[in-house]
Amino acid sequence: MKKKSKKGLKIRIRGILLFFQRENLHRLLLVLLLLIFLSTLGWSVFEPNTSLVEGLWWSIVTLTTVGYGDITPTTFAGRLIGMLIMLVGIGILMLFTATIAGVFVNWQLRKERGMSSYNFEKHIILCEWNYRARDILQELRSDQRVETAPVVLIAEIDMKPVDDDHLFFIQGSVNDENMRRANLEKASTVIIIGDDSLDPSARDAKVVLATLTVESINPGAYTIVEIVDGANAQHCKRANANEIIVVGDFSSKLISRSTIDHGISKVVADLLSSRLGNNDLYKIPVPESMANRSFIDIFSEMKHANNIIVLAVQKGNEGEIVSNPPTDYRVEGDDHLIVVSEGKPQSLL
Image 1 (cartoon, one colour):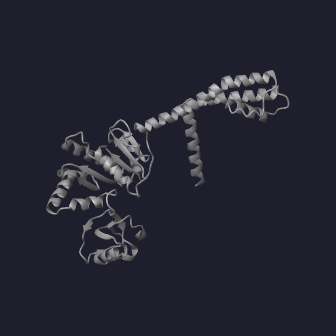
Image 2: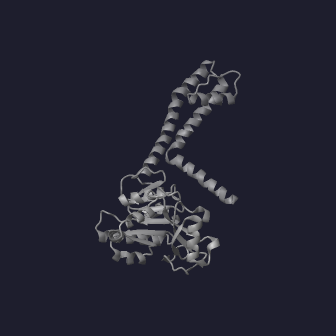
Image 3: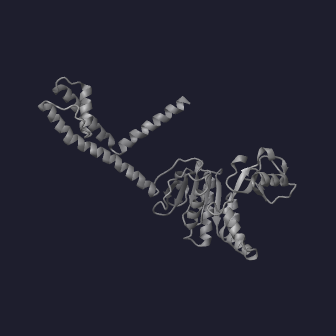
């Protein structure tokens, strides 16, 4: 453990040294230190009854224009040194601070223009930017579980599109290089949205290609993709996408169902959005006290004790989902429940 900490410290120190060298700050810093050394030495030589410590204090106070006035030169040589450090030293110090400020401004601009790289872990990567991506981000931020989670956006736009302190932008297409800049290797979830500037066929093909890129770099990442044509879902499955959203198919089914049974769309919107209504959909592990029991027992107890409705059971964490299981369906201990609840049911976790 100590070896790792020492190695990490050495890496940080080396990084600071390289930063100073890259920005030419080491030369300015060297000139500043040399000026302070010479003025301290000159002060202690020419000013009577003074020490090197007092000379160093006076040099720094004068150089930074603080001017406490507790120590002042009394000799001609001491005043000459004071004039020199005020005329030359202050200019060098201002140049030094201006250079550092410029570096930070440039660093911020690089972030805003998507030119930086990131090393987050268990973060979300969002591919492409449009009005749907904006809605996705708003929904994520309205849920307390991911309210401050880092989201890395990869899109071919000029600037970071929204003011979100936890949204990090990478400018460019969804390719191997930009995925690595987003640290895909350590990401937990990748959302791939269709490119609206392309025709439906090319748009879905781009989604499939991006999915293959993700799976080749990090097969463990949970991949959610959006396509237009349901016929392309098989290609996404072959690319190992975890969830496939067929945009047109979903909205068409919702509209047709609402036409037959009025109000269905309002219920779905209430359950899907954290910003609308009080109840939301959640996935929770089966409580230990309810493991290996029938679905109807769990359903009844969850409703009576916690006012939670169980809609479906998922085998394991990412396995098959059984919606509205039979009453005698046996729920295993490692299964998960898809529930409707007013807020995340933390007491059951």
